[in-house]
Length: 405
Picture 1 (spheres, one colour):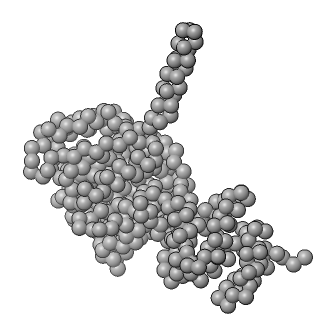
Picture 2: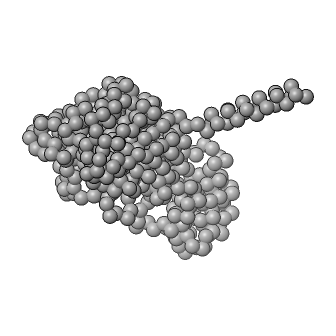
Picture 3: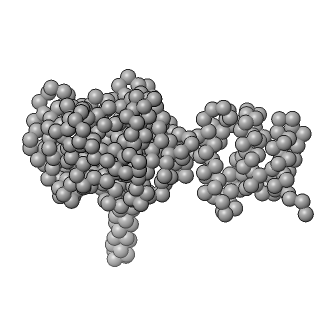
């Protein structure tokens, strides 16, 4: 009996260990913040949420002392982490901390440079080599050339002038320049990014740097008229750095559309995984934006199908189509899978039967059902044949679903 009890006890222990291993996340991430000319109090918790919800990261946040305070106590244990995310622009770090950070990256530590972190540490040589390009802070031609794309080719421009500018915040297209990099592989070649600052005139050492994506800085918005770097990578020693200029989070703002953008979120998550490991295992979301429509995730994560349907019920053809594109992408991804398509079909029929759904929403549903509907929806559609508002769309759908023999 004692032997059996011992065996059972050992099995329970092994199962407990296995269960804990399954829950263990792959990487440890550290977000450094505490000073910034942007709203770091809002951005850093969101960055942590974005990493944690991938189920790949366990994420800590550390704050520096406030501006002007004693920085001598700021000495993070970088070696404990696979990747460090920089959400920081402020006072210089102690020399001991700077040396530890440089050693960490040289020895293979990953880094993510987020938005205004490329404004920091103008006089720190190694930092500027790590970030590739930076702006503001007194940067000029002494710090390196401007880098941008012109006529489809990367340009290194040593023209004298200040580094760093942006026009009015607006939506803009992001264009991939490398579609085979692990971070960008599988993304559309162009996608529309939510309202953001489009960083321009960045300049720096640009050593061991690869530009993954650019954005055109339209002069009508106060831009340079050039294709400016938006996403890029740098290698420094054995370390990998992912630099994103996207994701503005402004002081005094109540909404943060740039951080809600599915394009920013996805590239940030994928870029951080790459910086930590050199690979990307995350799939591209089905509702990733295309070149025609912004996709925002108000809770910084994809909407559930029920939430999307709820939004589609309010659809107005004169307004944003982002939820429409979301459902269309899901439908097309499910093409060839009858069970999944039927689950969508049932939800779409509910929209047709809804008393609150708009006519525009019902017309959209009828167009989609015309190519992917089954026998399930036909009797429902026939009930709408006499509807003055929908009869043409109903006739079109039924004709496609019941071709004459």
